[in-house]
Picture 1 (cartoon, rainbow, N blue to C red):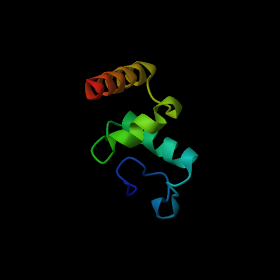
Picture 2: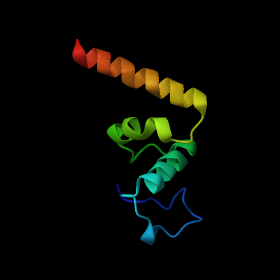
Picture 3: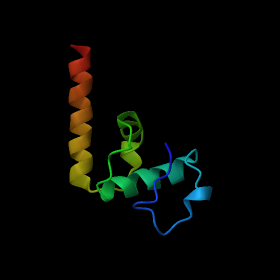
Length: 75
């Protein structure tokens, strides 16, 4: 994933290390909180969902969505 300056205006994205889990989770949280889902991969959100600092209701909704997708895939 390439860092996007659109909603991360207050940081120098040239030196951002998205391989660092803490930084990646911050970045994902920030993009989700600003509604910028376009470049986010579903697998990445699912993998880090428990650690993202996003609205609790949205987090619950995403967990239910991924649980239903898993059940659907197993059918």
